Length: 117
Length: 114
Image 1 (cartoon, rainbow over the protein chains, first blue to last red):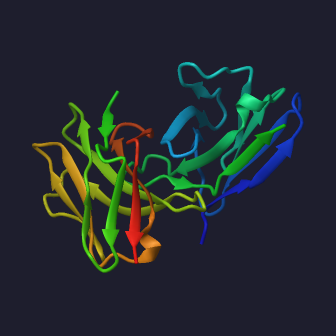
Image 2: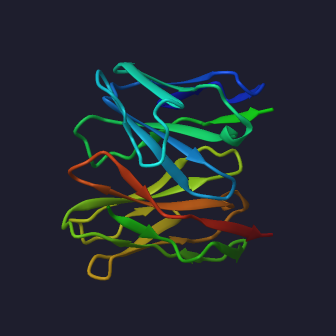
Image 3: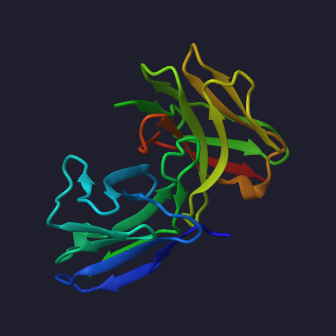
Protein backbone atom coordinates (compact mmCIF):
# COMPACT_ATOMS: atom_id res chain seq x y z
CA UNK A 1 0.00 0.00 0.00
CA UNK A 2 0.92 3.64 -0.34
CA UNK A 3 3.39 4.88 2.23
CA UNK A 4 3.12 8.52 1.18
CA UNK A 5 -0.21 10.22 0.82
CA UNK A 6 -0.55 13.46 -1.13
CA UNK A 7 -3.66 15.57 -1.09
CA UNK A 8 -5.46 16.93 -3.03
CA UNK A 9 -4.93 15.05 -6.27
CA UNK A 10 -6.41 17.80 -8.40
CA UNK A 11 -6.99 21.50 -7.86
CA UNK A 12 -8.61 24.00 -10.18
CA UNK A 13 -8.81 27.55 -8.93
CA UNK A 14 -8.80 31.17 -9.96
CA UNK A 15 -5.73 33.28 -10.39
CA UNK A 16 -4.66 34.96 -7.16
CA UNK A 17 -5.75 32.07 -4.94
CA UNK A 18 -3.35 30.39 -2.55
CA UNK A 19 -3.30 26.61 -2.71
CA UNK A 20 -2.03 24.22 -0.05
CA UNK A 21 -0.83 20.71 -0.88
CA UNK A 22 -0.24 18.17 1.87
CA UNK A 23 2.22 15.31 1.89
CA UNK A 24 1.99 12.71 4.62
CA UNK A 25 4.20 9.72 5.36
CA UNK A 26 1.90 6.97 6.56
CA UNK A 27 4.09 4.17 7.85
CA UNK A 28 7.28 5.89 8.87
CA UNK A 29 8.81 9.07 10.18
CA UNK A 30 10.21 11.12 7.38
CA UNK A 31 12.67 13.69 8.54
CA UNK A 32 13.16 14.74 4.96
CA UNK A 33 10.58 15.30 2.29
CA UNK A 34 11.08 16.56 -1.23
CA UNK A 35 8.88 18.66 -3.46
CA UNK A 36 9.09 18.30 -7.21
CA UNK A 37 7.46 20.01 -10.13
CA UNK A 38 6.91 18.18 -13.38
CA UNK A 39 5.89 19.61 -16.74
CA UNK A 40 4.29 17.34 -19.36
CA UNK A 41 6.66 14.74 -20.74
CA UNK A 42 9.56 16.11 -18.72
CA UNK A 43 11.54 14.92 -15.76
CA UNK A 44 10.99 15.80 -12.15
CA UNK A 45 12.44 19.12 -11.17
CA UNK A 46 13.41 19.35 -7.52
CA UNK A 47 11.97 22.50 -6.01
CA UNK A 48 12.96 22.17 -2.39
CA UNK A 49 14.03 19.84 0.36
CA UNK A 50 11.89 19.97 3.46
CA UNK A 51 13.48 19.13 6.78
CA UNK A 52 11.43 18.57 9.88
CA UNK A 53 11.78 21.38 12.36
CA UNK A 54 13.90 23.62 10.18
CA UNK A 55 13.63 25.82 7.13
CA UNK A 56 13.34 24.22 3.74
CA UNK A 57 16.24 24.31 1.33
CA UNK A 58 15.18 25.71 -2.01
CA UNK A 59 16.78 24.98 -5.35
CA UNK A 60 18.15 27.80 -7.40
CA UNK A 61 15.47 29.69 -9.24
CA UNK A 62 12.62 28.63 -6.97
CA UNK A 63 10.93 31.56 -5.24
CA UNK A 64 10.77 31.00 -1.50
CA UNK A 65 7.98 33.50 -1.01
CA UNK A 66 5.97 31.94 -3.80
CA UNK A 67 6.28 28.35 -2.71
CA UNK A 68 6.01 28.14 1.06
CA UNK A 69 7.05 24.86 2.61
CA UNK A 70 6.31 23.81 6.14
CA UNK A 71 7.47 20.56 7.74
CA UNK A 72 6.06 20.86 11.22
CA UNK A 73 5.99 17.17 12.09
CA UNK A 74 7.77 13.97 11.15
CA UNK A 75 4.83 12.85 9.06
CA UNK A 76 3.59 16.00 7.37
CA UNK A 77 4.99 18.54 4.97
CA UNK A 78 2.93 21.15 3.17
CA UNK A 79 3.56 23.19 0.05
CA UNK A 80 1.57 26.40 -0.33
CA UNK A 81 1.52 28.08 -3.70
CA UNK A 82 0.78 31.69 -2.82
CA UNK A 83 -1.15 33.98 -5.12
CA UNK A 84 -1.11 31.37 -7.84
CA UNK A 85 -1.08 32.40 -11.49
CA UNK A 86 -1.59 30.40 -14.68
CA UNK A 87 2.16 29.87 -15.06
CA UNK A 88 2.11 27.97 -11.77
CA UNK A 89 -0.12 25.34 -13.34
CA UNK A 90 1.80 22.09 -13.22
CA UNK A 91 2.03 18.66 -11.66
CA UNK A 92 3.52 18.72 -8.16
CA UNK A 93 4.87 15.58 -6.51
CA UNK A 94 6.19 15.04 -3.03
CA UNK A 95 8.40 12.26 -1.79
CA UNK A 96 9.78 11.11 1.51
CA UNK A 97 12.67 9.00 2.61
CA UNK A 98 13.69 7.21 5.74
CA UNK A 99 16.10 9.02 7.95
CA UNK A 100 19.69 7.85 7.60
CA UNK A 101 18.70 4.97 5.38
CA UNK A 102 20.18 5.99 2.11
CA UNK A 103 19.78 2.59 0.56
CA UNK A 104 16.05 3.09 0.60
CA UNK A 105 14.21 4.52 -2.38
CA UNK A 106 12.19 7.63 -2.15
CA UNK A 107 8.51 6.98 -1.71
CA UNK A 108 6.37 9.22 -3.82
CA UNK A 109 2.92 10.62 -3.36
CA UNK A 110 0.49 10.31 -6.23
CA UNK A 111 0.96 13.95 -7.18
CA UNK A 112 -1.26 17.01 -7.42
CA UNK A 113 -2.37 18.45 -10.71
CA UNK A 114 -2.73 22.19 -10.24
CA UNK A 115 -4.64 24.23 -12.80
CA UNK A 116 -4.89 27.98 -12.38
CA UNK A 117 -7.52 29.69 -14.49
CA UNK B 1 26.17 17.81 -8.51
CA UNK B 2 25.79 14.43 -10.06
CA UNK B 3 24.25 14.21 -13.50
CA UNK B 4 22.14 11.42 -14.90
CA UNK B 5 21.70 11.05 -18.64
CA UNK B 6 19.09 9.08 -20.51
CA UNK B 7 19.92 9.37 -24.19
CA UNK B 8 16.74 7.76 -25.50
CA UNK B 9 13.75 10.12 -25.24
CA UNK B 10 11.47 7.49 -26.78
CA UNK B 11 11.62 3.76 -27.28
CA UNK B 12 9.18 1.19 -28.57
CA UNK B 13 8.98 -2.56 -28.25
CA UNK B 14 6.74 -5.27 -29.57
CA UNK B 15 4.68 -7.05 -26.97
CA UNK B 16 6.52 -10.10 -25.57
CA UNK B 17 9.85 -8.82 -26.87
CA UNK B 18 12.80 -7.46 -24.91
CA UNK B 19 13.88 -3.83 -24.69
CA UNK B 20 16.83 -2.12 -23.03
CA UNK B 21 16.73 1.44 -21.73
CA UNK B 22 20.06 3.16 -21.27
CA UNK B 23 21.27 5.38 -18.45
CA UNK B 24 24.65 6.87 -17.71
CA UNK B 25 25.70 9.01 -14.80
CA UNK B 26 28.59 11.12 -13.70
CA UNK B 27 29.98 10.96 -10.20
CA UNK B 28 33.24 11.05 -8.29
CA UNK B 29 31.86 8.93 -5.47
CA UNK B 30 32.71 5.28 -5.08
CA UNK B 31 29.57 4.25 -3.27
CA UNK B 32 26.04 5.21 -4.20
CA UNK B 33 22.66 3.81 -5.16
CA UNK B 34 20.90 3.65 -8.49
CA UNK B 35 17.21 3.27 -9.19
CA UNK B 36 14.78 2.90 -12.04
CA UNK B 37 11.34 4.38 -11.60
CA UNK B 38 8.31 3.91 -13.82
CA UNK B 39 5.70 6.63 -14.31
CA UNK B 40 2.57 5.41 -16.12
CA UNK B 41 -0.06 7.82 -17.47
CA UNK B 42 -1.52 8.02 -13.97
CA UNK B 43 1.67 9.96 -13.10
CA UNK B 44 2.38 7.83 -10.02
CA UNK B 45 6.08 7.14 -9.53
CA UNK B 46 6.68 3.42 -9.07
CA UNK B 47 9.99 1.90 -8.07
CA UNK B 48 11.04 -0.75 -10.57
CA UNK B 49 14.46 -1.84 -9.39
CA UNK B 50 17.48 -0.64 -7.42
CA UNK B 51 21.17 -1.36 -7.35
CA UNK B 52 23.83 -0.74 -4.72
CA UNK B 53 27.09 0.33 -6.32
CA UNK B 54 29.17 -1.86 -4.02
CA UNK B 55 27.40 -4.96 -5.31
CA UNK B 56 28.83 -6.43 -8.47
CA UNK B 57 25.84 -8.63 -9.09
CA UNK B 58 23.20 -7.08 -11.29
CA UNK B 59 19.83 -6.60 -9.64
CA UNK B 60 16.84 -8.53 -10.96
CA UNK B 61 13.12 -8.20 -10.28
CA UNK B 62 11.05 -10.68 -12.26
CA UNK B 63 11.05 -9.44 -15.87
CA UNK B 64 13.22 -6.44 -15.03
CA UNK B 65 16.97 -6.61 -14.76
CA UNK B 66 19.83 -4.17 -14.92
CA UNK B 67 23.24 -4.17 -16.52
CA UNK B 68 25.38 -2.22 -14.09
CA UNK B 69 28.80 -1.28 -15.40
CA UNK B 70 30.45 0.71 -12.64
CA UNK B 71 33.63 1.59 -14.49
CA UNK B 72 31.64 2.85 -17.45
CA UNK B 73 29.09 4.53 -15.13
CA UNK B 74 26.30 2.83 -16.99
CA UNK B 75 23.05 1.48 -15.58
CA UNK B 76 20.73 0.09 -18.24
CA UNK B 77 17.34 -1.47 -17.65
CA UNK B 78 16.25 -4.59 -19.53
CA UNK B 79 12.58 -5.45 -19.73
CA UNK B 80 11.91 -8.98 -20.88
CA UNK B 81 8.63 -10.33 -22.23
CA UNK B 82 7.26 -6.79 -22.51
CA UNK B 83 3.63 -6.30 -21.58
CA UNK B 84 1.18 -3.58 -22.49
CA UNK B 85 1.23 -2.43 -18.89
CA UNK B 86 4.92 -1.66 -19.18
CA UNK B 87 4.14 1.37 -21.32
CA UNK B 88 5.25 4.38 -19.29
CA UNK B 89 7.95 6.95 -18.74
CA UNK B 90 11.03 5.43 -17.16
CA UNK B 91 13.38 7.49 -15.04
CA UNK B 92 16.85 6.54 -13.93
CA UNK B 93 17.90 8.01 -10.58
CA UNK B 94 21.10 8.35 -8.56
CA UNK B 95 21.40 8.73 -4.81
CA UNK B 96 24.54 9.38 -2.85
CA UNK B 97 25.19 7.45 0.35
CA UNK B 98 25.90 10.72 2.09
CA UNK B 99 22.76 12.59 1.16
CA UNK B 100 19.04 12.29 0.73
CA UNK B 101 18.72 13.94 -2.64
CA UNK B 102 17.95 11.98 -5.76
CA UNK B 103 19.16 13.01 -9.19
CA UNK B 104 16.84 12.03 -12.01
CA UNK B 105 17.47 11.54 -15.69
CA UNK B 106 15.28 13.16 -18.30
CA UNK B 107 13.27 10.01 -18.85
CA UNK B 108 12.52 7.55 -21.62
CA UNK B 109 9.01 7.14 -22.93
CA UNK B 110 8.36 3.46 -23.65
CA UNK B 111 5.61 2.38 -26.03
CA UNK B 112 4.56 -1.26 -26.17
CA UNK B 113 3.11 -2.30 -29.51
CA UNK B 114 0.44 -5.02 -29.39
